[in-house]
Length: 459
Image 1 (cartoon, rainbow, N blue to C red):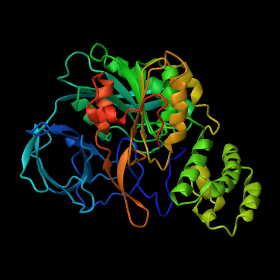
Image 2 (image 1 turned 45 degrees about the vertical axis):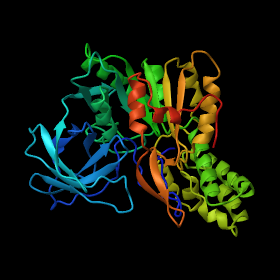
Image 3 (image 1 turned 180 degrees about the vertical axis):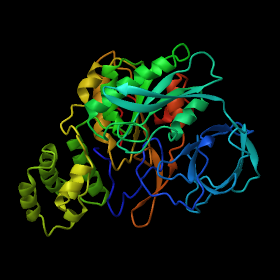
Image 4 (image 1 turned 90 degrees about the horizontal axis):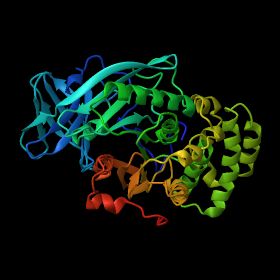
């Protein structure tokens, strides 16, 4: 899962995001008004519904709205004190409507969703503390988000980034949703992104050091106000968070759509999944593994050796139709000769990283959340290893949740006639499951339905 790319033409096309949502790099239109960053936060309707409004790195004219039903929508600035979110007739999970506000100091915003009248949504009181802290010689930019009205000391999670190269501060929709439920969050821009110093990297060891430093800063800022402290790592963060937990002791661990395996295995699993989705049988899968094994050796050399052997093997299958469908994280790029691109998208990845060793050392409660139909990090191999791990000792308090009909990011989708996936929103109940588990509350009936009993692997 080096850079968690998806490029398969027919079945797997979508924009990657981890927690921030809809994140990609674009050039802003200087003629379009910017959306007010001061509206970032969580809001409650008169009926008690919650939405978050967050910034979108690279899209300064817009704000992302997200709710606990998994729905989301992009509000775009249209003029003075107003934003509109366009509807999508083919996506019932798209939030659409009109947003108005009196100013940055206002206690409420006006929201009119499609088919309903305007209502005043009250901004929830949150304590937001900005900070800069050091990880070794690198200064990192962070923020602590605390619920003001939570009873007692709220739990806190430190967000562990995926592979995205965009800022996390002010752009984590899920962090503000969690804050609305009484959970504090510490976010920081990973090195080389946003307002943090350093150079962007995918070196898990170095990133884990940064997370450990963030844990220390979160404890310092929230001293006397916060309770249990945990880590929440998503996508590539599923490699980093357990390692960070071994460096800076924490009270709990959440991992979403991560991998227990090496980055080389993840590429092979993705190729296997993609070909099976296209209808190819195990005979073709076996042939493709000949190529992914050789591609893995190229990756392990940081893409400097092994290409002649891979291209010779490719020639053996030159007339077979499945060859052009091989993609994965880097195998497809290498087969197309895109060596420099593959190297640039996976800086300093530890290709033979041992994901199990730090997990074996942990004796803290863990929640792992998977998409059953994950096209980027196919979940079945990781769930099998995790299930074996939690059966290995009494100190392994590991909960596993699986969301059906969802893809990477726990995104629900509809299957289109051409086999492609139209991504709709987050799976219903996803955010509530995260909140209830971190709060140590009984899970809802919907949440309980997603939990996987030991050794009950059904795919």
